[in-house]
Image 1: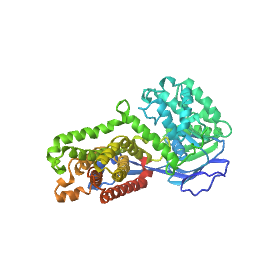
Image 2: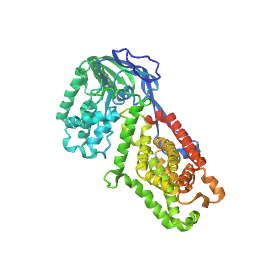
Image 3: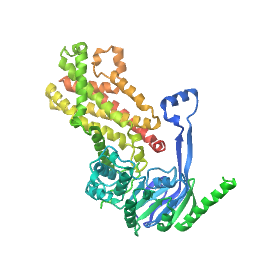
Image 4: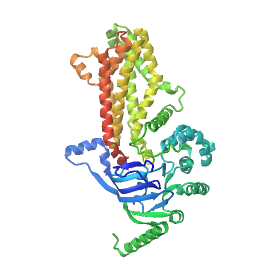
Length: 273
Length: 270
């Protein structure tokens, strides 16, 4: 057994070696405020008038449990806003669960909306080193790797240019190149294949194929159902923060497609929920 | 391959080495962005207090020089001490203020400890101080006191200043997450801090009852202590040093405690 990183209330013990990620009864409540709640002046006035602050609480993830075996490729599918990306953010520790426990065994990198998070004023080279350190690589390692990263992203002409001069596709290429250069043992992908031109997409797929080997555990959030069906072992379908179906990739995709057709049919009949 | 460094840490439980790595990279970014395209580089930060000192000396020395035995240069050096303090405080805390909201996108992509962002703004300012104004203060101390020991005591009020700024930085960067009109309000706060601390006037020139009120500003004891060590030529006044350290320590502790208490809520508002 290796020491697992514990998130949440920490009730669970260490994970067995063949398990990489375990979520047990995870719920997440997020709070949001009406726009005026962001304004101190108006908050004070409304407090003096006796209006209460409008804080709305919403349970975005409800009682989700899942286990990822080492080497498993899991697809997360479901409509927009069903909590797919939120689950990735919970697994990699960006968000902290309100209830339940999350345990992670090995090194992890999440690729969520590539390219966002660069410092637009700094040069491509500086951003490679900075982004890498933020992701958890050490500085010297990033300096050593920067050439290979520039090379893969095909941005050799731009190495000293500020990132704001790159096109959004180029920035996404850079993000992908940085985050996948050192192979993380667990990789979380959020719609990353939808970026870049056709040439770069092929290159990304080729690199990701390397992760499809035995030992890498991968979670993919995707609307590309063909990709999920062909590349993943298993899949989970989410709806409003709950797991509504869990099974092999093919079964889950079929269920999701059936559910979409069914809800369209009901809408046409005027008896939708 | 250094996959060791890649080990995933929840942002609220980061080992010191990773925290320092992050701090270093963010401080470098902070300084690079501040000085991009300027030939003077880090010495820009010295230019501001120097010019302000000259302006104040030109305008106000006729009023206040009598508190310094009528010597204009002494008044000028006293203003410079005050200016170094207020300048550090206002630059470091105003850069820290938007640091969490401004990195909201990043915090939504990568698991990072929140506190490293306001702290990096402070450390960047410490770096500026260390290469800019601090050597000048050391030189002045040596000239006036002829006692290297006094130089050592300089770290007292400076540490008080840093602690005070850290506490305020935690507080304002947190407040900005909740209330997006804080920057306007904070400009006013900075102005109040500026005029209620003895930057361009000696505390002794104020009426007694006003002095008692001004003493509540933590910057007052920090400036007073700094002036006493740098300019008086006497042995450092330990009571003043203790006051600045105490005020700074209390503010740092309160700021950190509040930040720690509320940081889990931040993600929902970013």
